[in-house]
Amino acid sequence: AQSVTQPDIHITVSEGASLELRCNYSYGATPYLFWYVQSPGQGLQLLLKYFSGDTLVQGIKGFEAEFKRSQSSFNLRKPSVHWSDAAEYFCAVGGVASGGYNKLIFGAGTRLAVHP
Amino acid sequence: DAMVIQNPRYQVTQFGKPVTLSCSQTLNHNVMYWYQQKSSQAPKLLFHYYDKDFNNEADTPDNFQSRRPNTSFCFLDIRSPGLGDAAMYLCATSRDANQPQHFGDGTRLSIL
Image (tube, rainbow over all chains, first blue to last red; front, side, top):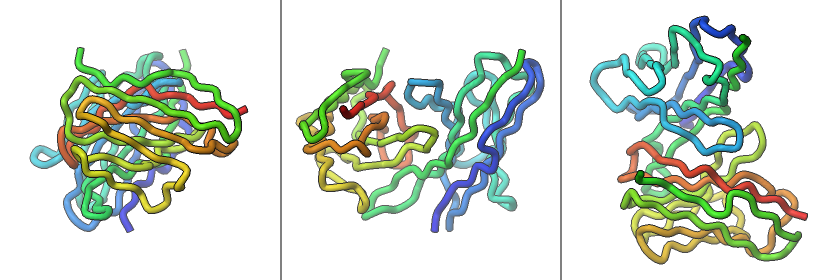
């Protein structure tokens, strides 16, 4: 079955430190991959996406992610975290057929806390 | 700016009293989605419209219905809300299947 795993429920980093959020997926073909961020009480904002081509993708707010097919991973990285990056981060895989339509499958999310 | 707008941001209703949440979009996207998100959980897809074509998820309770009268608007109707329906409800749109989804800020529903 198609699935997305985010192994880390909570992560705490110091402001200015580097960040890596892990995401592993299970999907039978080349997936469409997304990272979304959600601040408290808000909707989800798209950080970046991977459809094909260059496996290192750049997103907004200084984030990047690397697609590694051999590891079924799509980890999110940022070289220097800002206090405003504290939020919930969701990895999602698209292209999952459901009744003939495609939909996103979300991971459980990783909550990021940033210490000053 | 083109947006996905959800109204109201907060909704309180009584146990068993029908409630309607609304979503509008200025993106002219073909697909509109409704998600339910409970505290500290991932969004869970309830159903979506591809244009006028409605697709219900297999595990969406019958209590939940949706209407899409035109491209811009989509409504979520909860016919008889129970305490377990208290959640954040998120609307999203995408230009086409597999394209990135654009989310509204959500409606937080409370049940008294």
